[in-house]
Length: 218
Image (cartoon, rainbow, N blue to C red; front, side, top):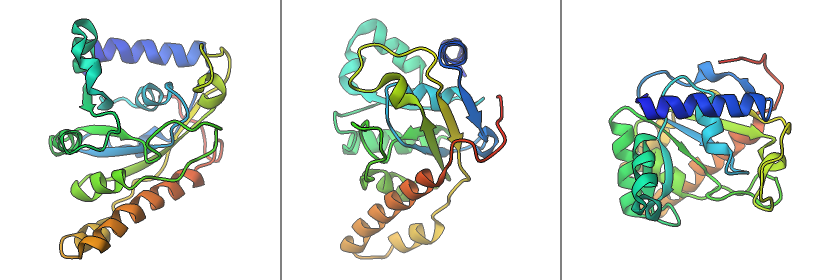
């Protein structure tokens, strides 16, 4: 972590602890070094820093590329290791940037649903994350956040205090067979593989329960 990232990490951990009373489960399942994809459900703007704050390694985030045009904000985003992507997050330039971070041994947070839920329920996964997973050698850790929709969803202007938020990390998934198959299959089958990976990840996310394991305080 660079100094700006580390300071922000400390501040977010304090925010989640004292404002939301956060809970963290199984962060030890995330590799401390090397490339890793964190695939999380998405209910709130609180989700990306919550997933990252539960870990003791630096993580790359995604943000719309037009935000980098603002001088001060752009510098902060660079220090936070943010990857610029287009509005839909599925452009070739954004994918290349994601893969570059992974090939350099970084970790990155991706959301299979693509956008925040409107009603608090899990959404259908989009195939874009499947493409990123297949094109990279990184293990994928399913992650589920709880309580962020109730604390600060898209219908709220301000976060609600003392609405407990929780983040839980699942066991790494490798997708080795599908990665091997993708190297020689047809284009149609390749599209099916991308969606299969996305669906498998959403299934793993859905299977994570809020309090099934012993709590860990990182």
